[in-house]
Image (cartoon, rainbow, N blue to C red; front, side, top):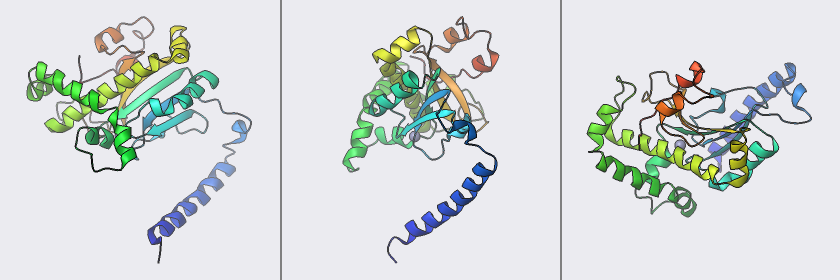
Length: 249
Ligand SMILES: [Zn+2]
């Protein structure tokens, strides 16, 4: 039969959707959201199926969500401006993640990949090259990793560690691009929008609590020690306790 697995998958998903719609209707979950949406986060994250919005909130109408491989800003700048400018979310989160295939691919030979996959990842390759050079300058990956491993029980390989450094650098780069965008920069300058760069970890690199989020960047600042004493954050233990990063420039 043609499209056999497509048909089987579709049946499976429609069965799921049947239960979902029954549940949503029974509990009136859309009752307050029929006329408009009022999300409180604009979220840019990776398309990876293991990174779920519900790690932040699973309520309907809370997260204005944008996904692409490698959580890149440029292909979706219009959507991001819509979330922050029109819907006025006070928070914009760029969420990278451990074990990211897009980061891995951007550090590999992908010349045989589909054209648009290659194109999509092209913007990450210079970041990967810069981090490799930085680590060479700092004396090599083995020594750097020994000094900067937040979870001592982690059994991460040097390659996975390097890819996590590039993941952080890629998030930093995306925050920089956002701050180069005039409407977004103005919102941040006026204190109406806070941009957070963060990493979603399910590989035990930052902590053994899989699915935790760690803050690596606030409004472009990447130095965790500086961030912990910043005026509007220093008293917020819930936030400062989550500030952790591997990469130091
Ligand atoms: Zn990914």
